[in-house]
Amino acid sequence: MQVLEKAFGYITREFEGRIQVLVFKQNTAGAGIQVPKGTVEEGETPLEAVLREMVEETGLTNLEVKGLIAQDYAEHYSGALQKRYFYHLISDDSRPTWQHKPTGINEGNLQFTFYWIENKDDVVLAKGHGDYLYRIFVSVMNEQ
Image (cartoon, rainbow, N blue to C red; front, side, top):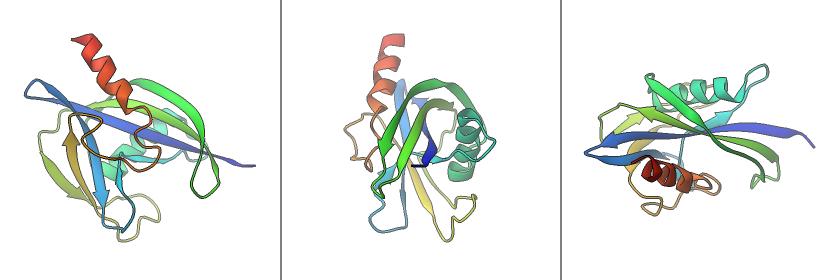
């Protein structure tokens, strides 16, 4: 069985003394609320992939990688096995919301609407996207 590697980005910012995490909705019915992520391409490390995918999916170019917070294997709803890498990245973007058309290959007519959440329970994320989100909020609380 082939394993497909995926790099997820939990992008955070500090806003008015609170930590917020970036999420988005896309203009495709049933896609749910997601965090940015993408496929690790051949010859690319997961870290290189997450940096590339975050720019392609969000348009944000000034991101700092805080670190890898988790990696695991999970079965995708399609039946494919995925090796998933979850990274914490930091942004200084001040916009409360914005829209972006992803620039990756085969993105078609997708448009993402981004916004920030302050609690892992603020939204219900698409399956698998929030699996390690609690670690962001726990680590931030421990740093304060």
